[in-house]
Length: 354
Image (cartoon, rainbow, N blue to C red; front, side, top):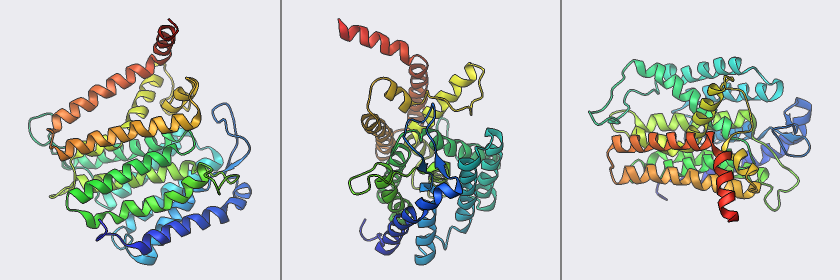
């Protein structure tokens, strides 16, 4: 691993993220980039929503200065700049769900058509050979990109959750790159990790950073979602992929399942699937009596288990159709539990009282 590490880009990303977080905080109120508490948000006071902008600036600066990533990814940063701007406008003006969705598809088209980073092979997920989708892959990729962007946007509900889940996925990607002899590709996810670390310190109010809480905002969660799906598509496609497509699905399994289950529940009730509510996994943990810290630890642990299952399937070369079938079975179970969570909790509490 150490043979592939480059310290300067990582240090640059960390330092730029740290100082931009500090410098931008006083201007957040003037720009209107602050989050006020309401019926869904239980924090106190106005919290700056500048974390995502700072993370993006750190990654961009580190890549430009060191030429580790930017030389191959000008279109990635173009798409990222658009999604960060979209997030900033959404944080500031609360854009409509439909308008936001249209813009996300436009960003996804940069990845699929302009960068030619799109899905052509789904792997042998049904047991009858690899499923090649050729030109249909452009449109399928658009749906996947928008889905992952919104999955990470939706999971960003308590301090440290979106960032922590991102770290789990990014470290899993680094590990898979190393064991697949693609160690030269680990700097891309590691630069993101370096930019996330100072944000997590502020966001979680770690000792020495207390009193300066910062949220990543929609700009951050959407940028992270775009980054992860960009990397996963690149590493699962082509003549010599570093991992199988179903493995990538497992790495981001928890955010995907939470989004799918929530959207299904909303559609079943006749509501807009993009309408915000307090029925996400983190909301359920909190309402079940968990503290925010315990909820964070449990959910991150669950996300890590999903990632480890994906890694185990890749390392042990478990047939793709088995990994796909297992994923879909858990998705159905997850959705059922989520729809009936309060009934299940009541039964559990009654039995615990006996």
